[in-house]
Length: 311
Image (cartoon, rainbow, N blue to C red; front, top):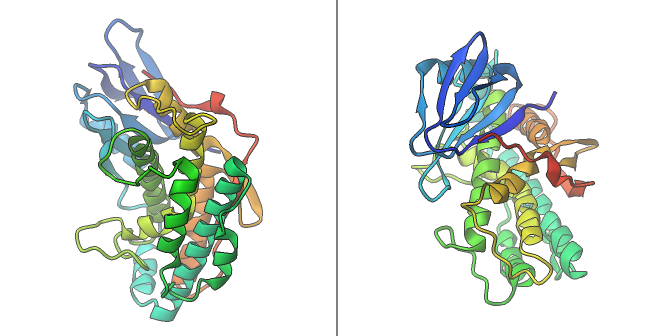
């Protein structure tokens, strides 16, 4: 069963728990309840929101993730369950002992999948993959030539125009990308913890202040889905910039988690696909099957109407 992604954005929202239900109270609106076990990602976009301690306890015990945003509507922090797998200590040890060649081959597969996804997105919007598809065959173990970066140099100007520059702190389309990446990254981190892995111990990313290096690794082939959705929102010419402050804009970005995609040999909602990929990465890093189940192709019959909205 796919769990729901919900966002609370009404100023003055109060969250509490009663009888395994998340109780939502908002000014001038009726009290509502949501079953805790149905929730997978809870996003609070309200600087005046208040909570009871039981909200975090119940959500984390149920395996859900809580994401809070700042005044710019971009995520600033998240809470994940620590005890998420019954053999996580055993898997942690195996992960720590993973050999360098295994990590490099895993990164090779991830980079190949990301570039292929970028080529697919470009082909969808421009009719041309921009030379990215052949680059996947040149990616070697560990990507020593940094073809990931070379692909990005071709990708961004073709997707959003020659004047576009990818910047993490910028406004406009960059803000939409940042929001989408942050939400999917949080869901990746949740999947990695659920698979019994250490999220801070990456196979490629290794910044000492980053607690989610492994999540950033596995996020890479899923980033193009965010790019695809933002390019959709930008209109045919790619120059329309929807306002991230609008709940409808955020809802369309959040709806990505419900899109059905191809991962490995399976078709499933993106939120579940993240778990499939995380489990395959766990097997690869802990001595099992080295092949990774990674996304391929655009969503099947995308449906924006499934965007989660509460508040």
